[in-house]
Length: 96
Image (cartoon, rainbow, N blue to C red):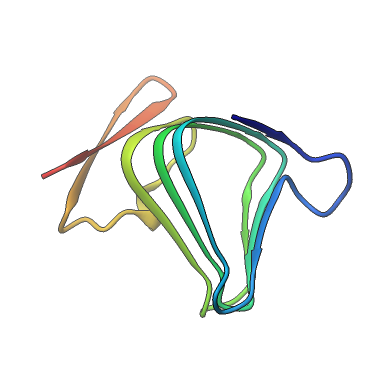
């Protein structure tokens, strides 16, 4: 899928304790992903993020699982479950 932000709000928003936004498969996100108010975003698959991740509070969560990323997913990967490698500008996350 492809998501594109048409305004300043972001291309994808997870806001609130029970809000979970999951990206599976191939996704292109043109704009920011915003996570706030205890929301959660999960990435898995091939993710191209042409924007940034705006995590506004400690109660919000971003998780990167197995897949490829055009951004550094290190802060969002459970290092006990996944390994991260980098080849050029692509990071790959694989299960241990």
